[in-house]
Image (cartoon, rainbow, N blue to C red):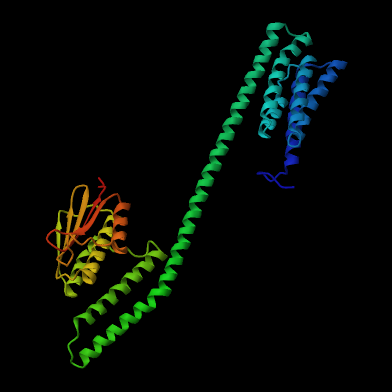
Length: 375
């Protein structure tokens, strides 16, 4: 048999409660009556039985409700002005067990019988009997209010505990998934990128050692390998621990533009306004859009120039990347993974995104990201 919240078995706790209620009823009854007549002895027996029957409240709540109610009416009729405390405990147990209709009917019947029992005792007139019943009803409402308040408190506590458990479970699963992704990236990409990086470094070294001119494409491959290794390392660190290293943001955009220029693309960066209190999420999104846009220009646009313009407004950061590539308004490009990823990033922050060919030729990418300033 299990134990309750306080380390006491339920059956022991039930008997302790029943014994305490019975003792309280007997003490209250003895304080008002001291004779040993047969009627008084019957009243003492009913007081004791009404309290001790609560020990069976878990197993037979309806029976306990009926017995305690009859005992309360009986000792009232015997002339004992004792509150129906045992009956209130029985009402609580029956309601907790789910016997709502039976409990309601029995409670109404007992409350109606109590003033009649007081009249039958011959110790009270009609006014006193009904006043006594009204007092018992007030006590019942008081106990019911207290029980309802405690039940509500326990329910709220359990709801808070369940919500906290759900949050902890979701956070743990997210951490596990992040570590799984980090392992997959490490196993699948790190080796290949390292091979590309090492081979390009060796090729550049050998060409220079021989006195040969290093092709621009080979230098671009070497630089791309270095950048890919840095990006992968930063991504793995972010996946393994969110607090280890700050992700790239607005401060790293000039490096992207400069790197694009070293690969043979005439790229320029224009910044308007002051960069104040820009959230990190907005900065990361701007960086990723510039990075993906310049990569697409270098791979697909066949462009010679590219311009990056960042404008800081009071409530928005506007970004525009233009190139003079072969895109035309008549040729509608199919949205690839890069454009879809940019759109999703901007939409997640509540911004607006547009990517389309320009009328004068080339392609343009424009994003507007809302900014919540801190005072």
